[in-house]
Amino acid sequence: MKYAFFPGCVSKGACPELYQSVMQVYPRLGIELAEMTTATCTGAGVLQEKDLRLGDALNARTFALAEQQGLPIMTICSTCQGVMSQANHRLTTRPHYLQEINGLLREEGLTYRGTTTIKHFLWILLEDVGEEVLRQHITRPLSGLRAAPFYGCYIQRPTDALEFDRHPDRGKSLERIIEILGAEVVDFPGKTRCCGFPILTINKKNSLTMVATHTRDAQSHGADIMVTPCPLCHLNLDGMQTNAASQEQTSIDLPILHLPQLLGLAMGLDTKSLGLNRNLISPDSALAKIGARL
Image (cartoon, one colour):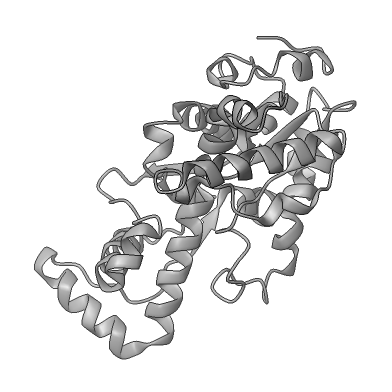
């Protein structure tokens, strides 16, 4: 299984522990990666609000680079997955638009033929690696740990662009991974809602309220940790949790783990090698439940 690896901006910047943890787990699963070092940011939905054509051109360029290698794209960012999936959907369902965008790529000698597949690491674990192989690599089952899934927005909708019609199990993929790894799934209403990150700089108060709502809700349902496949969600839920608790005059202490960190724990990897010491909300108490520590 070989993929053109699109790590995204945040895993190389504000959340380096995400990149660090996925680098630890993927070789053990028979995955081969060719990192896309010349690809650009997806635009994260923000650019698209201002200039959709420019955003689609940037993503078409990334798709063309992967297409040249004959590889599907693997991303570890839900926001990247959503934005790229939407761009690819527009390009592959509107031939004249694809032709227009290719006119912009021509200066770089690139052409996108519309054949690139974009898959989040979460989906790859279930659809390509498979449950049987995953179970073979679990040396430290997460039994006794209660984990709340948090998808965020972009990896759940729009379902047509994300191909939920062809892969209906994607809507429950994070819960399935948690179960395979041996932890107990803690369901709560906010798992597919926005984390608040997109409005952090324009409406900080509401953004922090959203952080408090999601984390308190998961905690009130008995969660020891929350796990997310989105680094932007992680930035807000982990990085702004203390601020959110202060604003709402409440106590919140819910560790937020990246998906590869949770996987690495079940695979018996060292916690520091997974970057868990970088998480702002300490996972110490949760780690103790599975016999691990920082």
